[in-house]
Length: 638
Image (cartoon, rainbow, N blue to C red):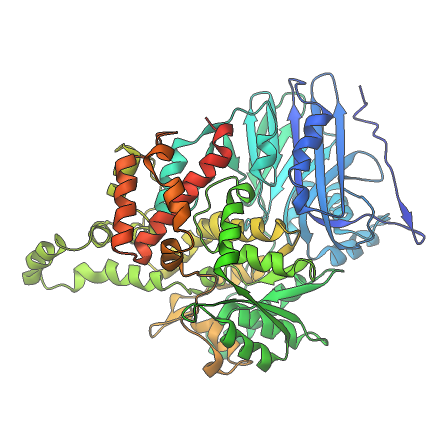
């Protein structure tokens, strides 16, 4: 057996300095108190994440009488890209090893601070900075970090494994644990490769998938495999296997900063924080670009970045043959105004069908957001040109961009606006309204109304689809009264579980580091203190952000009705995707697992062919993705 307290440390020398790579990665590892797994299992699990790397891989495998531990890393270098293998990285003293997926954006400042304490660095990477921060400050290091990360850090002195995920959830992490075993990974497929992990379908998660279009809370489609909680540290005692969780202390320079009452001062302060966030997230030694649409989020990102760059930045846009969905001409005008180096890539039905067939292999869970198709297309189109892509994911959540916010607030206030003598008539007419409208109106609180507005299936439809009346419903908070409450809900749920999950999987599948340029703790903290009218004013969404945007881009060039990565879903489901509907949504295929009510699925399919509304199309998409997923992965989750 190897002695865990005296590991071998290999150092690589280049140009007179010891160098290791900073990496956006795929990480995995385990603590096994049963001694069931070997280094072969570790390497096999890591190999499933190879697409997330491309510039190197590494493993640490060590044993003790009471435990076996393995850490692995597939690397995609974006800083100090020397081509040398460096992760998992062990400290010069030999007592600490880390496998990191992410970037510590303030690592240069932290490095300078640590040097003043007499610390000597052997590499030029943020990975070593992270290790030295832990050695210096322990768990309090999180108060210093500005980063997008998930990592596992082995402390041989304390015989502990520390696992952490940042406070916003920008980097994915999943885990599985029993009394004597704990495993983690950047993607579920790595966990599925470990033979010790029991693989069953999570029946509760199926209902939330059909309700919301993504997996809510910390659930996944697999029973026993969970999303690692955002903003959390898990500490595992290596000898006993016991673990405990604690929250990360989020760094924020403006924790006590009170927003000004002066509009110009607020606008200037938000622009300053936005600019700082964007520039921090451009740190890289590899080519980078910006994903540009015709909307406010990405346009503001491109404008502020170009303002602070001496060279023309690269911008990319997805175009569609269907002019109703094509933002490319508007995005091109914005790019011309900003003088960026701009490229367009047109997404055709041929591309769409080719990518549709690949979705189950890329996503180990059913993917409810059809926007994954153009996201994968743009990633495939640019991956040979850039290795870092900046996006403005989360802009709608941070700045109040969703139209459904306004709808929910109006419907919540509706009962108080109806005169008492008309309420009886209103309730009678409500009986003739569509089922979804009835559900929204009858929900008894603001958040429930908001959830129902965005829901794909109503409660009754899910009960019929799953043949049960006691299906799992996501627990909701009580007392939501205003816009900020809805934005906070999306920040904690829709943003990490749907938007960030989708962008990470799509871009990292082609080895592109996705940088979410708006998601800096200081900016999030400051915006959280502003009143509702900074976000929606006089019926206009994104009031505050638009004031910043129009400093650099004329209002006439902006698109209030931008589509983002929306595809012509109803049309494609009736044409190029129809063969897949007929292949997967038939009685023979559905009876293979009997998880869904066959007659109800066939009724939904018939209803779509009669009325190809966007609502009916979304239901078909969710059913199709569930069926395609089950064919690919059902063998792992019986």
